[in-house]
Image (cartoon, rainbow, N blue to C red; front, top):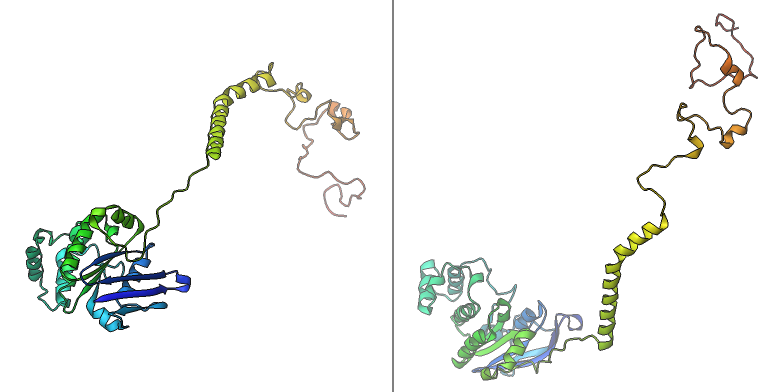
Length: 327
């Protein structure tokens, strides 16, 4: 079996998947590069016949037959598509896949199957806590239980951590058993695989471009260092300069002594509203009390005027009698 992707893409302008061409076949393992969160799953769906590309075409043995492609190629561990929930116990995942394969699907059958594979002690462990290489081994073994499976598309095994050579060697074992293997990985895993020459990993999607790190120009780095040095020097001398400035601005001033207003220095007996004799407001004829009125004796029977009551207007005629009645 040979599966070929001819310049396939997905989404407007290739946003979901840029133009990609690759090929994988029986008895060989290949890896393909797909970055971002969604592109690995999109590429896996297209390569396994479960999604139609917007451009290009996918062929199996030279013909376009998505139904045959879906029957013969299994999509394994694709994020948000075919990956199991991380909190489900490993025995539960195995039981579900055994049911789809037409096998006994009870918890006892799942534990027996794991024991035969050598992982019986992991039956109660959530699959999210299983070692990455062991996870790949179990999921791939479950995938080939379905009748007619001839190939596997394994999506993003590098997202679970671990060394790439672990899951790559497992994929190579399945290819030696006669399956067509395509492993979709990210950029870091692709670089690691190409550097491990003993693995003889082949990139089906083309060579991986080397990672280039942006570096600052030397002149800019020197300018930044000089600016940082100047800032440190300014911070070091700022407290001393501030103290000197405070001392030179008011050398004869006593900071703790309260200030006295010269205009009210002699107003020791008057209230807070008493005018000052030097105030410009004292020059008017109506300002201050009448000296004659101040010297006149005050009768005990004379009522004290209410400061809040307005004075009568002298131009208004008096309309009341001596006894207070209206005229």
